[in-house]
Length: 387
Image (cartoon, rainbow, N blue to C red; front, side):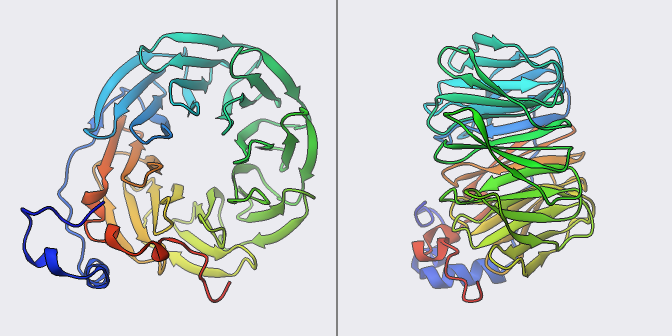
């Protein structure tokens, strides 16, 4: 984004980047309230961006999928997709196809331009809570309450292999960025890493004392961080499965976890109403992001690492400054629990979804009117002196 438009106040035309940053941090953010759009009649249960950031797909417990234009925040297309809750959505690499999975135990693939169903992949016997499309586009993975993980060929839609080993419901699946590894977690207190091309087990991640809920690979796919309702997040070696760090900053279940873009920090969200930033190499707490009044469901970093967004059962989404944990904005457009929040891959939009069936897509100028002009050096988090 460039500096403010010519028709804005003259005082904003001449300030330096440093002054803009100071002003944006010292002046309370005044946000024009806008209602969230009603895209669904049921709760929003899944939300994902296309890789080019032009589209947002949302799924609901009303069984529908909606496709949004992020530039004008309007629905492009909506259709009844499954016969039960839509739990997961994922775009393919070229954004022409969209995969969905849900409580009807099916994985389905849709042609984005028309909404045509291209395939229904059957095999799971129970609800699918985890689904992902590999970064190189070749495979779709799914994980189910039937305790299995399945790999599907994304071109033929045929099942490649069934990955067995979990002893309870599978809660998530995540591909590594290089598509070499697939991570899964389950209610059996274990995480697992699988060799994608071979379709074989790689390592079992043992150490959590509760159900695993989420995971994230670091930027170079050497580490995986998982979170659990045992109140911890744990960092593992992808190569050996060794637990490297136990981050135990919460006393309540941890629902969401993410590495910072540079990998130096780990972000966690918990039932204790807080978001915490910890050092990924030591587990030492760095900041507590306090302000939510109820359970925090989801957290994420902006692509440039400057911001943190969170979604809570207190009916708000919040924006934080990643460098110091300062609260920058509270978004209260929703009228029920906010369960999902995500930045667009280009960092220019911030979307959230709620149990009230509404979706809100915010343009960057709404929440970052000055900060876009910072030097790129400020957008990376590898410079932490105390790492």
